[in-house]
Image: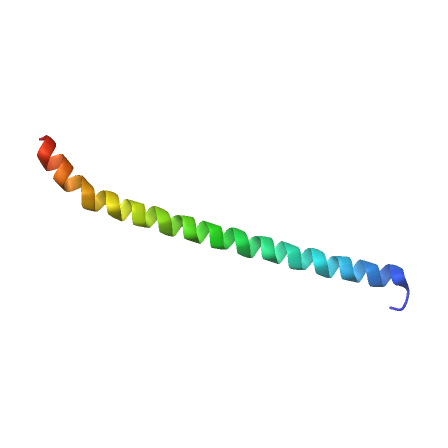
Length: 57
């Protein structure tokens, strides 16, 4: 483990794994937040649409 090549390979593997995990976490957070926004928008539409439909008919 003292040769610099294996040390460099280990370090790069750790960095790659950490970066990949961070990317997955960020993507998951973005997906969950966007789905929450969609749910809120959907709830707003449900609250708004009955008066609109009754007034138009």
